[in-house]
Structures are given as C-alpha cells and as structure tokens.
Image 1 (tube, rainbow, N blue to C red):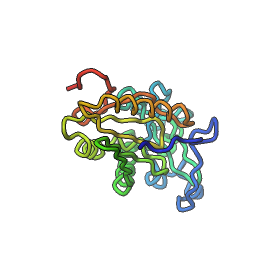
Image 2 (tube, helix red, strand yellow):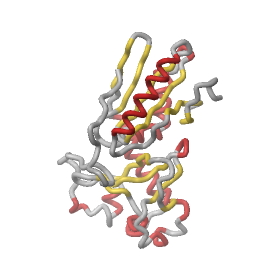
Image 3 (cartoon, rainbow, N blue to C red):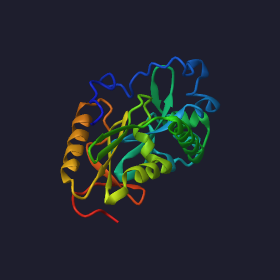
Image 4 (tube, rainbow, N blue to C red):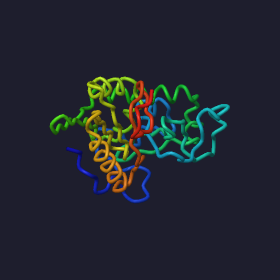
Length: 234
C-alpha cells in the first residue's frame, strides 16, 4: 500500500533531477538575472538537516550576497532546511546569494513569491490514497518536484490532520525524498503500522538520489515534530 520506491531520482551529483516539461519557460527568460521572470518560477524545497547555505536573514542588503554561490536557506521544521529552487527548462537550480544580488530583492519578497507559487501548485496537485482494512495512507508523488515541500503549507497540514487524525489516530509523516510526501494514520491499537511506515521511509530515502530525511515525523497541533513511539506529544 506504499508508493513504489524510486530507482533513481536524479543523476549522481546533480543538484536536482532533469525535468522533462516543455511547457516551462526556457532560458531566454533569464530568471537568474531577472526577478520578474524568477518570481513566477521559484519554489521552496526541503533539504536535509545540516545542509549548508547562506541564511536569508543574514543578508543586510541583497547586494551583500554578491559573489556568494551558496544556496540561500531558511530554517525549516524539525531541523530540516528550506532552500529555494528556480524551475527552469529541463532542470531546477537552487537560488544562491548571487541570484539574490542580481534580483535586488529582500528576503521577505523572495519567500512570499516562493510560497505563493507552492500554494498555487499545491491547490491543484493530486493526492493518492491507499487503504488496507483500517490502515490509510495519503501520498503526494506527482513527479513535479514540489511534493515533499507541501508539508510547509498550513492548508496541507490541516488537510492531512482532518483526513487522517480521526479516532485517536496519530498522523505520521514521511519526507524521504523531494518527490514524495507520505502521511499515514497510526491507530492506537495498531503499533505494527508505525514500524512498517518507518521501514518504508528508510528504504525509500536510502534508494533516492534526492533524499531528505530517513526519520518519521508526526503532526502535532498542525506542526511537524519527530515521531516517538511513546505517548503523543502535546
């Protein structure tokens, strides 16, 4: 009842997988230089805990990042890192300090555009559902590349909580790779499901070239927290 494991998400060493989407704007739009173009193509993406980068809030001015080729990042939930990807023709590029300097925009402008684009995409993206008796799993694996990042949206955590959190169930979350968001209902009398869920997340992350995290999380009051087999957090 779990989504298929990936054979390869990206070429080894590539920052992100090539994306075969002829409908995306080409390089002639020059989003790496032109904010009006980049503002329509930038999305937040989750990266593993400890991913290095230039903190957006450390930029005194956009120009202070000139020459910095590190990706610009924010702190994400549960020690994860949020980076920002420019969706280009056939590939995606992590926005760096050099990009911010070229765009001459502040951190809040960049964040707002990225999350607005993610929310607009997410509103039309599908969910897959698998059931096995009382066990239920919802997954987002559209292949568009923004699936795991959906967990950053309050409307998504609210949807998953409402869909899976009934009957005393804890809502488990897996973010094994960029292309998969997995959510399952852990019922109080079915501890084996938590083990199966954790094993799948671990295997998927280990098989992925764009892995995010091997841990299992849960939704606690609408927020992402590390899952513990003990009593639910409050």
